[in-house]
Amino acid sequence: MAKPTPRLMRRRALLLEQSDGHPIYQFSLTGEELQTVADISRVSRDDTGKLIGYQRAEVRRHVEEIAAYLDSGGVIFPNSIILAISSEVRFVKSRGPQVDDGPSSIGTLEIPIPRPGQPKPAWVVDGQQRSLALLKAHNKSLRVPVNAFVTDDVEVQREQFLRVNNTRPLPRGLITELLPEVGGILPSRMAARQLPSKLTEQLNLQKDSPFIGLIRRASSEKNRHAVVTDTSLVAALAESLNQPTGSLFPYRNLATGETDIDAIWAIITTYWRAVSQMFPDAWGKTPSKSRLMHGVGIRAMGRLMDRVMPTIDARDPKAVQRVLRELELVAPVCRWTSGTWDELGGLDWDALQNVPKHIRALSSLLIRTYVQAGAARR
Image (cartoon, rainbow, N blue to C red; front, side, top):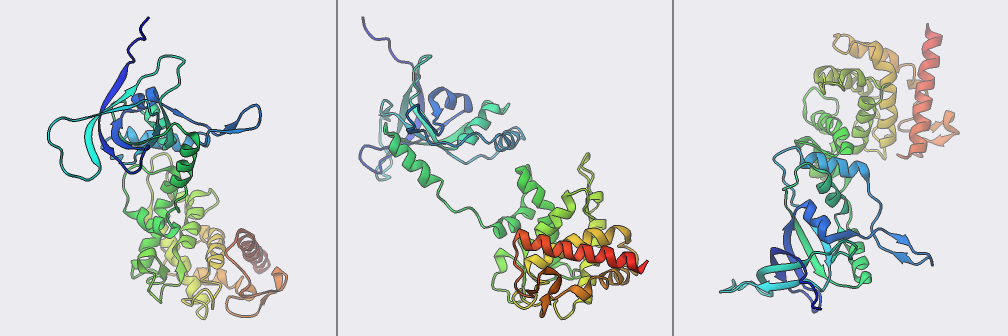
């Protein structure tokens, strides 16, 4: 009995020959088509303990974020899915003259469609979260680019998986600087940093900002006057904006998405202007000469802001003077440029580092001192 003719998925494709035995095909698929021909090889071990597969588990939040973007309209999705594809595929070169483009050809790629219970001819090497999001999205007709290399060897697949995922992530400072310029739907982690990134940008540019020209950005690394790391300031602002105990939190309406930017700006500039006046010898110096401008100082003083500012009307003409009166309570324990932090076990002034342990310790010292001295003053 003759074997049944296999069903085929035919797609226009570009063949690129890089190495013998492993041709590369570039084409496009929808999410449903991708599911039809490709599996995700989850990393696990068999009954004997042997490692099988190579893909990490699904990251549900990441998948939902991508799906939400795919359904948002006006989608631009150039990120390609990388597949390892079986040698069972067949490439039929197009007839007629071809453009002389080196070892590449245009034609039709024929991919076997497996019957129920049969193994699929392709495996996702990179882009599993994107491929799952394509299935979850309501926009089923969206086609995405696919790059596929031919191999039947799982070791080759695993090697390529490691190489693709071994690239260095974007520097945090670069992301921080780019976020204010990005519109549309962002992943939740980036969206939470977008407003503080915008505020940091304005703090570096606006004439009424005490930080004008002092913030170090990816695009201005050679500015010798820039001494404050933007990521530390973004983290301090994000904490105040996103935590219910933050002094900036009440000015965001999470239900409607509305934000009172003017009120937030007044609080930030009033507080930090007072800080610059309270500690003039420590303000504007490099972190190696002033722990106030160091990440640990920015984060700790940011947390102190959340204690000081709720009782002060930042739009009052005398607001800076009122903040200065509050900062006088903590000034005696501060060792920004010399001496030792006696209340922190005698640490030298420059021994504090921008690490969670030291940020917590300095924040606790400043807030505890502020609360106790305030109670004694009353």
